[in-house]
Length: 126
Length: 221
Image 1 (cartoon, rainbow over the protein chains, first blue to last red):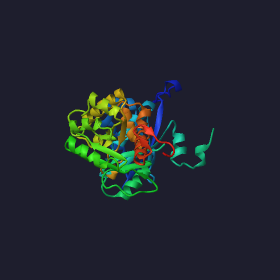
Image 2: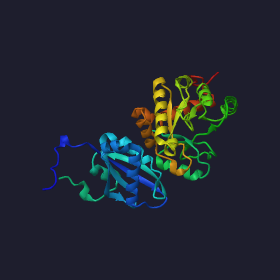
Image 3: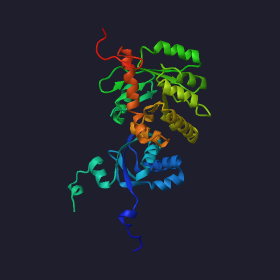
Image 4: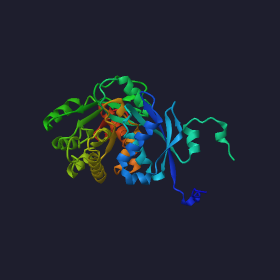
């Protein structure tokens, strides 16, 4: 037991999941993408706002083929993250446009609506 | 909802511009340099971007193009031109009044007359994306938005893209305007209903369906 316990729902922070699509000339590696997202957010928002933002790029939801991914942030900072994503010009030496497709409240609905998870297990209710 | 980007400065690659604009979710674009021909899949707004050095040149250029194109835009930057454009009712959009300046380029007199003459003030995303001192240009834009809010002047948000990779989707452009002090509804209106309104009134004027603020309904005998 070296982890703190999960907070009760009323004390947890409200989160939003931002689903984005990368338009680029050639395929983008996950590592470079995360680096440039963090760099752009830090330079645009600064360290203080960034701490408010609680940004996290979710690793196992990034799809190399469709170039879609998910970012987690706090619910009142989605506009800030959106603008900092728009201010990304290049990843490495490749020109990119990062387009936000949608914002959801849970990962489950993000998968269902935008990430084309057609596995039946994702829709099971238990 | 229809989204418009009224300021794209890409000279070649018309096919790609249209492809990307469609992909990003625009239903109408205005390409200032070398506008492509009419298309079915996307609305292309005929426009003219006037780059004048002084007031008289600007007025002559406006006189020449006003009755031919649907959108007359003036390239700002010089205070004399900014003010003259705001005071001229024939101008539709004043493009980035803070370009290349060390202040915001607009004062209360300009914005008040812009609001009286229905001149829209442009928030140019490219000015933020490619500026050397981003914090400074953001604060100028913030001041312009504050003044426009105060005097109820129109604001439109455009990408001002010089290459395809500088184009952004409408919601992203709106989010920048929202962060700079405009509430979210008016920010989204600044890429959708405000440009649409400008284009529609100008079309009515060109095709003889409107005189001044009066719309003509039915046939005139």
